[in-house]
Amino acid sequence: MPITKDIHDASKIINDTFYWAFVSPFKGKAIRFSASISEIVKTGYNSVPIVSVISLFVGIILALQSAYQLKKVGALIYVANLVGVSLTRELSPILTAIIVSGRSGSAFAAEIGSMKAAEEIDALTTMGINPIRFLVVPKLIALMLMLPALTVISDCIGIFGGFLLSTTVLEIHPYNYYQQTVNALLVKDVITGLFKAWAFGIVITIVGAYQGFKVEGGAEEVGRRTTSSVVVSIFLVIVFDLFFTTLFYYFT
Image 1: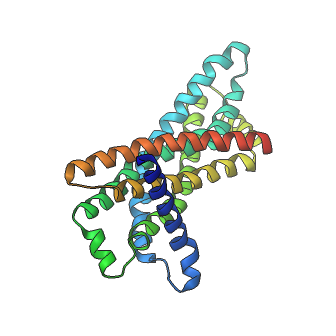
Image 2: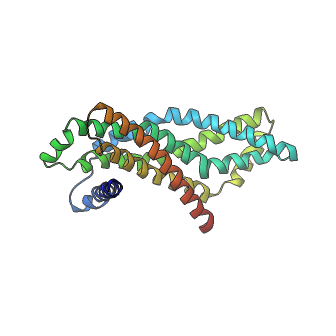
Image 3: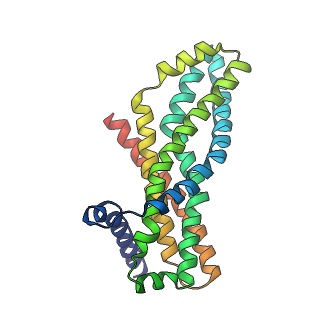
């Protein structure tokens, strides 16, 4: 059955990826650090501008929407609480993951898919080079490191956006806003968001690699698999976010 084969193929890619990333380095097969650094630049550093701009706007929007309700009960100062906690626990990790899945996850699928269509994957195998270790592991390392880093940037820029709106339009004193944010945020809020981002990085990499390796045909199939990688990544990010949110709600 097709679905059984898909599950088998996905399981094999997950198993091979984790083996070459976390087990083989202890057996003398080092990770390709130069390729990992290149992927870190492409997936992380180059994503900073778009993540920063979107996070700034989301912080402003969140502060505006919070103020719309809170001003009715004379509690505008709690805008700081809502913006800070919402961004660190939920919005920053998921927004960053969606941006990266559209930007980098699709690139993973397109790169691997193009190599598969051009039979370069078969050439690597013929030369005794494992394609998972050569292509996927550097991407996995990059996203596992950079998605949490981008989430921290998103947290800071988003909170700054809420601060800007609150201290200008809402006329909240800057020190009061700062103090309210510090009091509202807990270490576990930030850790929760960073753990989610780390898990999302793994999901995006695996989905992009899976869709790339499933390419059979020419450019049309590469385009279709690239689109599928974005859709599936975003869907799984939402599913995993629900899972982790429920988990942290009951166990923290």
